[in-house]
Length: 159
Length: 294
Ligand SMILES: Cc1cc2nc3c(=O)[nH]c(=O)nc-3n(C[C@H](O)[C@H](O)[C@H](O)COP(=O)(O)OP(=O)(O)OC[C@H]3O[C@@H](n4cnc5c(N)ncnc54)[C@H](O)[C@@H]3O)c2cc1C
Ligand code: FES
Ligand code: FES
Image 1: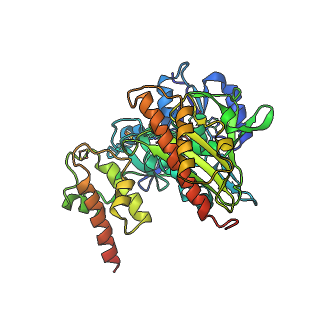
Image 2: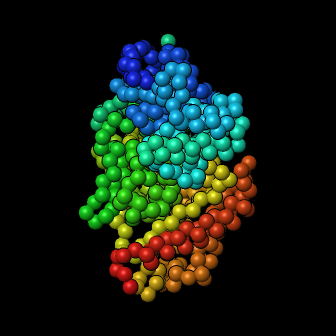
Image 3: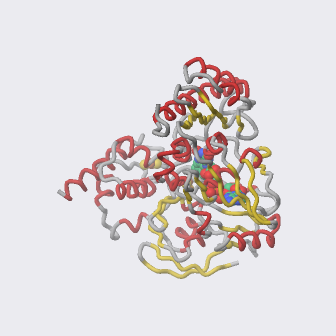
């Protein structure tokens, strides 16, 4: 049974018809053509499908699309203008934090959530913030370094 | 045609009515972090989910005048982690909530879902059991309350009557000089506990134990209270000898199985160790509380 869904995705209000069973991840990837949130385990384990629902990080594979009714969803595509990188993304690039890149959208959502709450996270706090994200390539160290660098840069920018 | 439906009631009464109408193919949905996986193999298939997150009363953490707490069933682990009163008085519950999955899971996973999923490894359950929590249940016949231990009948099985809904978990107020502890053994972040233990103890001014309880996770078909522990420790000093008795009693109470994650013998030994550490933590916190300071 298809149900009308009104949701704001990356600042753009949308109206779509979705099956009640459709996950938020499938909706974003297949109906919104936003493929930044990745489909991997579909069991909440890997964090690749992380998005923000009203500013709160969730694994979109474990959320029904219809749960986003009337709410705001932010995906990795919504973190910066098209073709541009925000400071956090830039820090990932500069620190060599991305190899295959598959986990990176999820890592960026975790890091964004962390830095909003904590402007000077310790290494342990950074590691805890990304504890729900699996990376099969980097060994995590460069990702941790990139997040630390982004936090430092933000503090310096604020003077 | 897919006739699966999603409902978001605003009240407990509406939720109960939707569940009754949906019969055995209907499920309550909280954070979905267990249900969405279980739905993939549910037989008969789930045809209706009733989302409890829109029911405001279920999302409340209410602190009573005596310091006891009613945790709404749909309160998330993230909300527990941030709650000042829980941090101050029930730090073991906060530690257990903080151990569940990673941050995005904790933003969704609820205490009611953790309890109602009835996994013997559920992290908040041993703490709630050791604290003497009670389940508040709504159903066709009105509201009833029962000790949490009576809610679980086996792995994934509850004593709830068909369609009944857990609305809250009630934590009793803690007497002065009471502390609680939680310990959990795993290999890495995001792993389910191999063994967990929670302990609560109350000390008199002479550091003698007046009340104590301990509960174990992942060593029996349900989360398990260590029977007779309170009586065995009453009047003892909170010292190394007493903690060794806790270790012994907990290991003896455990009824673990071998599986791919750990052997029964290892689990039994670790149940003792986790219980001892949890009780040591509880005693330290009991001494540190201001109530009735010596
Ligand atoms: C990646 C991952 C990691 C995890 N790690 C841990 C962990 O470390 N520790 C741990 O303990 N758990 C863990 N879990 C399991 C799960 O997150 C928890 O058990 C969680 O608390 C379940 O809550 P929920 O709100 O998501 O429940 P849901 O999935 O919504 O519901 C669970 C079950 O309870 C029923 N239910 C829910 N609420 C009620 C209610 N109020 N009344 C009656 N029935 C109800 C549902 O119908 C369903 O059968 C993990 C899960 C995932 C996906
Ligand atoms: S795809 Fe959602 S957590 Fe792995
Ligand atoms: S960069 Fe490949 S999975 Fe993380």
